Amino acid sequence: MLIRGKYVLCNPDIGGASILENAAVYIEGDKIGEVGEFTRLKEKYPQSEVLGNGEQLVMPGFIDGHSHGGGLTPLQSGTGYDFLEKWLLDLALNTNIDPYLNACYSAVKHIESGCTTMHHYHSTKDPAHLEEEIEKVFRGYQDAGIRLAFSLGVKDQNRFTYDDDQFAAMLPPYLREKVDPVMRYDQKAVSEQYFSLFDHLYRKYNGEGRKIFFGPMAPQWCSDELLRSIQEKARNYNNARVHLHVLQTVLQKAYGHRKYGKSLVKHLDEIGLMADNVTFGHAIWLTEEDLATMAATGTSVTHHASCNLNMRNGIQPVAALKKAGVLVAIGIDDKGLNDDEDYIQEMRLIHKLHRVAGFSFDTPTLSGEDVIKMGTVNAAFVTGFAGIIGTLEAGKKADLILVNLEKVMEPWMDPRVPLLEAFIHRTKGTDVDTVIIDGKVVMQERQIMTIDKDDLFAEIARSASKGLTPEQQRYASFLNELRPYYNEFYQGWHQQHYDPYYALNSRN
Image 1 (cartoon, rainbow, N blue to C red):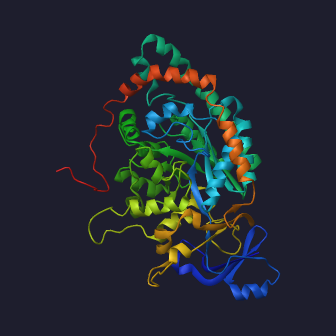
Image 2 (cartoon, rainbow, N blue to C red):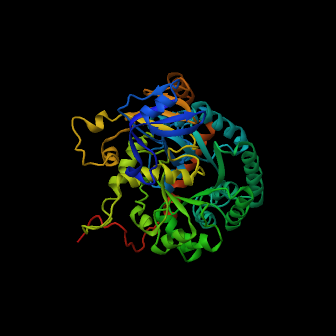
């Protein structure tokens, strides 16, 4: 198969310098066989089917470096968006749909905007049936045809707040009796069950086409013992990747200083977690010392611009991270700007959001090339697929997309404008015409080829229309009693000194 383009972006790591004109990608099986001039390749492979009208951009598929596989968004599921700590209370009240349907829907949305790979960070409402649930998730992604990285989530402390013992002490006796059995973890049992399931998943599923890695939820939800054990065991699985949420909110920054008297990043470094197989999700409330530590240890980050705005988290200091030498990849985290998974829209938001890192005329900003690299080469690294996908080179997996350029270029685009700058300013997810994953066409001319989208949507509507379970309804009533104490617990935590990376306005 030949994928023909007016332009072919071969390697986002060097950006525009790697663009070939009137070129094509020859696919042999599931890999790229050759990239070069279309006329020459057509003569060399005359029997090959040709996709592309010769006026499009061929480029590596995008990679979502951090999601939770939410087919239905939080808004569609009834919980909407708010400060993370408030929102987590209501998360259990999300509309329930079958995990298989959820994975299929999540994959379809990603594919439609040009994603060929996604990282699913898994947590569950139903620990008793976790393995069965994960099998359904894997089958959903496989049937949709998307490449998958999968983190198995775990937590072994702080079920309700960032200090459950202190929180329980605030509660009246009748509420304390209700929360006490829920917040008590058998940490040894949690650890043993987690590592047993991880071993099973890794041995059964990990390989060139799918990656399994560790997913400790966050330092406030995982004991030091669990975090140390995870990094130690990662070495037994070919230095498996470790992905965790770190410093997503200002309250988490406060937690580090209250619990350890120091930054959470400094604490994680001291217990031996940080290394080049570790990625921090969000990583907003970082100090300059944190940035230096991350760069020195090779710890990377995923940037969730839309999610961080929706959840009132803050803005990750991407310009400072880039300057410090920290690898930054893109993750949508199920909470896109348009309440969808439009990856190109996410890239554009990132491009715009970080244009005010300073007011000096020589203050650097992100280029279109920078952002595309974050969504391809960098995201391939954090999902464990470095050297396998992310560029269009012979021997790499055939994950690529065809993008229509009519709306980008019409009625006129000055030739002095670099193509990738025009792309980042003007393209939309709906401009993605064709998606090829592992050498297979999964979307052609905007038509999903792997599953029936209409049938999928009908099944989702039937599944979701059942409403809340009786258990969820009882939990909702319990939350109404608990919420006033929960809000009181965090009073004053946010009151600390701020010295922002980006000076966006001035009160005086």
